[in-house]
Length: 573
Image (cartoon, rainbow, N blue to C red):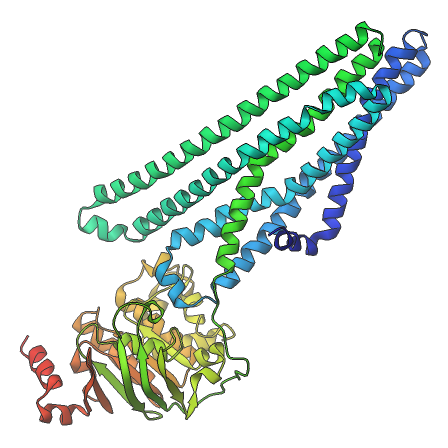
């Protein structure tokens, strides 16, 4: 883990070296104060040498001014370095998230992911800055103090420093329990964040069902779990700090007692005793710094461990010889495709040995009861999920032979639950092609029959859509998503119940835009309302038993099978 952590310093090694140099110089400056004080008491005051006293006082003033400059650099640039490392780790984690399979997001709460990327990296930043600096300064101070004290009286120095291992042993023993409590706290924070994110996202639903109190109770329970975990953490922290504080006081007592005895028996002078007390004060500071650093170390290590767990998640992998997919004709063939969720370890097959051919430029509609695998089949084409058996061919080539990114560039998806990013209408349409000009964006909006509405808004294409597009109606959001696909201009189109949540009037208007969008493209339509797909080139009836029927609307009506029953049921309602 240490090696992994240290690699984040590499891009900032110059700043890190400057920070460590300043820390070293601060440690050296701290050594001067006891030695100058010792000389003043031992020599200059008895000899009434005012000129040299003034010189050393001026020297101390200069040292303090230098320390101010060095500490300013450490506090400012040291924290800047920590923030840069934090950004590097945060960016690496976010980039890794973009490459994780859908299965990861299926099983991981959004709030938990946010807690890792935001909160954990903050603690890593503090550790990255203060960790090496505190250890370095403390090491220099302890070694330097030991050497200088030994020059005055080795036996007294050994007696005092013999107590240090006891202090460190206590701190190390308590560290494990503090670490465990810290990890429990992080898990609790992630759960609270997840509950909060979920409740805010679903605030309209909870208000509609008058379940605000229910959501408040869920949040209260999560907060209480966090408070309980935090209480345990504070108890461990209290044990740690109160215990180390007692040991530090005992160290001071031993120094005074042993120094007093040595002075009484004329083993050291009064000036040496005074210098000893100052040096002990100096090296107890780095000990306190090391003890305080332990808490920071726990938080930083815990955060870094959680980030490494995230980075250890296996990303989507292309085959070693995967190649770029250029614009395909669009023929899609499913050969004995089998798929189940949970990586094939649990549950029954959603798709079993499915065979289906979609010719280039053909519009194929998938209909059938819920749970038959219609949406799953659509998600397999852009490789959001991988089949457990069989293969999918695009223009006769297994889609696994293409890179995922190039494959997905050739596919446009319009779903029932349209997602708009926080920003403007222009930003959301441009998501189909960020290199598009304003005129191309306007043309895409016209083709989706949304241009006139956008122009009627006070800010036009610069209108803010709100989070997830809440400032717009369902039909408007759907048209913007269609404009996004027009701008992308893919040869393969997937319409996953794109109009099922709309009213009949809006659905008819959106359907015209979808019909125009589908022209000349290989189109796969998942439909709930059969009236919208009666003109499809082929209709496939997909149930839990697989494909039970396929043909044109008229052919399936004449068969009087499953599709015929579904059609009559909808016509009679």
